[in-house]
Image (cartoon, rainbow, N blue to C red; front, side, top):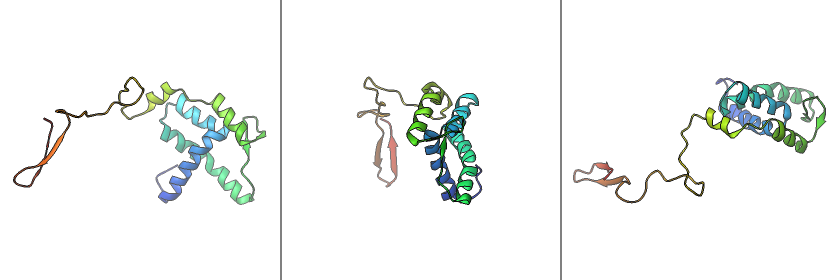
Length: 140
């Protein structure tokens, strides 16, 4: 998937691919390989799934038929069976997700929730307006 084209079409395709990777074992395999084998982050892996999904969408539209989910051997299966196969065979471990994530994770407290960045009191930022009507931010 490239940056070319209307944003609404790209966004819809991205959301469709993100959902399809959870249901379709063949697309789940593409996502798993991108994340685990190639070391790509989530967004790039979903874009690769979207690229694999485009020919399927075109085929369904041209032939005017329903989208059929197939297992890895090519046998038609239900959505429930597809979801089960993806969960069992193509589960991306949390360590891989955290390693590939490029966002900084906040520390957790004892209950497993994220700690607030600022606490009430002297360390919290103070916003005030001084005599010349300028906004002043201080970290007293």
